[in-house]
Length: 79
Image 1 (cartoon, rainbow, N blue to C red):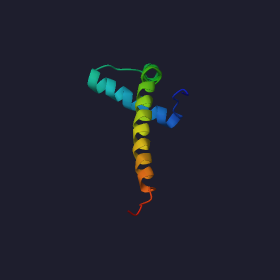
Image 2 (image 1 turned 60 degrees about the vertical axis):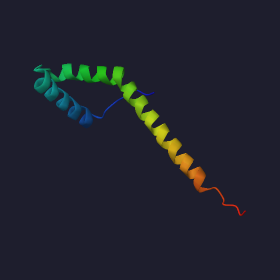
Image 3 (image 1 turned 45 degrees about the vertical axis):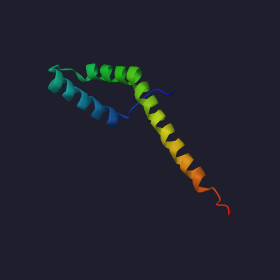
C-alpha cells in the first residue's frame, strides 16, 4: 500500500478540523506543527485499518454484483 498523502489544500483543511476538534472536545490547543504530527501518526498507524476495511467492503460489494451478473446471464431452458 502506498503512503497516504494529501495535497496542500486537503491537508490544510484536515489540520484545521483537527485543531478545532482538539480545542473544542479535548480542551487542548495544538499548533499547526503539532496537529500535523498527529495527522501523520493517525494516517500512518491507523490509516491501513480504514483502508483495509474499505477494501473488504468493496470485495463484498463486487462479490454480490458478480453473483447477480452471473445469474443474469443464465439461459432459460425448456422442459
